Length: 109
Length: 410
Image 1 (cartoon, chains in turn blue, brown):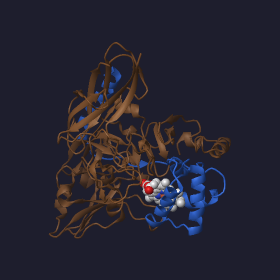
Image 2 (tube, rainbow over the protein chains, first blue to last red):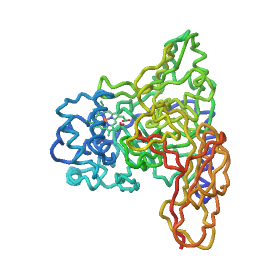
Image 3 (cartoon, rainbow over the protein chains, first blue to last red):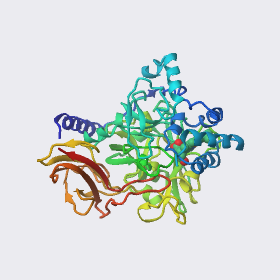
Image 4 (tube, rainbow over the protein chains, first blue to last red):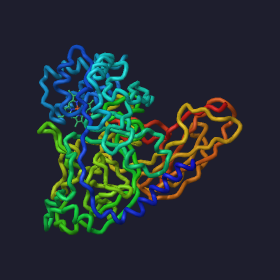
């Protein structure tokens, strides 16, 4: 084991053993979360529909970091958002969004 | 707001927008000056920012900014078997949870099919009998990034797992104070996180009464001797040793004893995978049932070297890593250089608790120069071993096959 690592582990454990039994109070916390408003979807047809419907519950990087998928799988995803998670999305917008996703994050056959 | 975010100028945001127009490059540049890591996904969705902008967290790989999906760089697992709190991965379903929390005002409800419904304060909890134990928290979708073909879901590399020394009140103590009435069936847990959409099902999971009363399932307020980081569930979370982290409800504030089965979405429909051997099917396969994910499976990793590394030939290569048994301890960790035909045992490090990470190490003689595939396999104390064959299911859950890295000796 590299020495600094060993030392860090020992300190952590000594700290943990000493404090685990006597954590007597908890401190109040107040934090700000990072603002993701600058993380946006790539421009192009359907961008308004996806931005209008898919940013309420999760940031755009969530969708952009998905693996490329074919139309069937993107359709399944959008349906799941509507049926399982009750995203209020019209059928028309859903179709536009699937087209957008196939174009931007489609799987090349 | 943290400086790194606040400091982003208008111009940088515009520059970010320009890059966003070309999805083949990185999709977003909000953390404009932060480094990018390549996670080598076989599907190609490999590039992520590493950001230090999240409260109480060091540099984390960002899979999703909101609600947070953050994991540490894999190197940190080489430093020891206890994951530092500021590197402990983060996963939320719903973005709306309090970020300003006064523990003096916190209450936990214990209600439903009980003799005496309780409203418990943090002061009460801190005064109750407590236990500490080491346990691995692992997301059901850990390693989803390595599923091939790629599947939708949190695109984790191998780092949505963490081992910590948890401190808290055994759930049994609190349930016994409330007095479970005869006819009770399950115990359901919920936290303070909420979806922005009104009708989204609340995130809840449940446990059987016997499991909830096993003396190890815990209402944890301590992690490695400190209070929980906000993003790991401050001030209180459920810890279910040996079970997948889905059950470890964060910002826990509601315990409900039900006299009927739990029919909520996340218990009945969410977090299920194929009920077949190794929970592995072929892409497109149909005609199998789904079953709820419960216990963790054995896993093991090399942590001091990574895939593609070069090592010196002519002398044994020193390898070390971590393993965990799942819902029991690690019995052995073995290495193979021939794709699993023959195995040699690694030396196990100190046992810090059966539910935790266990260090292993080995001096491995590589037969000659050139490329070598090194596989590592954990067998747990129930005799369950990681399968050689790659595990895959369309949900991207619970990869636990033997992992292999390629080393080149020169």
